[in-house]
Amino acid sequence: QSALTQPASVSGSPGQSITISCTGTSSDVGGYNYVSWFQQHPGKAPKLMIYEVSNRPSGVSDRFSGSKSDNTASLTISGLQADDEADYYCSSYTGRTVNTVVFGGGTKLTVL
Amino acid sequence: EVQLVESGGGLVQPGGSLRLSCAVSGFTFSNYWMHWVRQAPGKGLVWVSRIKTDGSNTNYADSVKGRFTISRDNAENTLYLQMNSLRAEDTAVYYCARDRVSGSGSMDVWGKGTTVTVSS
Image (cartoon, rainbow over all chains, first blue to last red; front, side, top):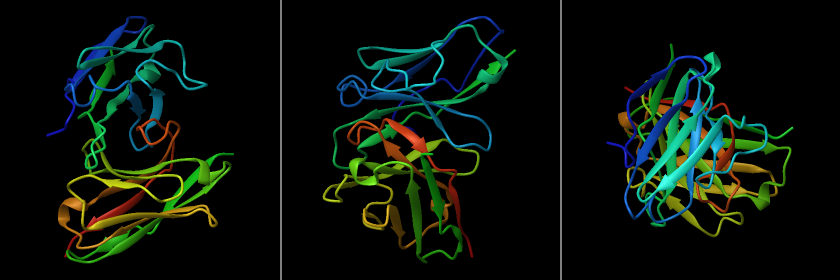
């Protein structure tokens, strides 16, 4: 069982917006502004999409945005495109000496 | 070009050992915290370990603590993961990743991964 809880799947039609949640505790998501989101296409390495809750690395589309409220972080993808279909993972820093970083179980995004 | 290239994976019997390497290029390796992350077949990402820029601080997942050791050679621009007492549940693709924010988990550059299979 993953430390952070994500929905197993979400779906949306091209052009729509979707939101993926990532629920943790006050010891991880709620305690630090170090939540990241990763996109992974089948057979590929993960790609950083959001870091520090809401920051986008250079080159990542502004259709991707992140936020956090209490112990739940969210990734919103607007203007869905076919290539957005992938697995999405959240992660959080915990500050612990063991399990210092934890991932969510992942969410499969299907673009209908 | 910023690049991470893992190597050293393979088939090993339960109880055996492997050492993974991650050769980096295109950036100043000694300035960055580094991580190992693994992914079992058909499963999600799991954080394994991280190491500070100068190797003075390391952390592990509880599932590998005491069996795996992360290290780095800044002169050779290489990250390592020594894996001992391997178990079937360690079977996974192992990725090395660079952290852009002091080891917080903001992994902005990833290698393509190396596959470790633990089986008799």
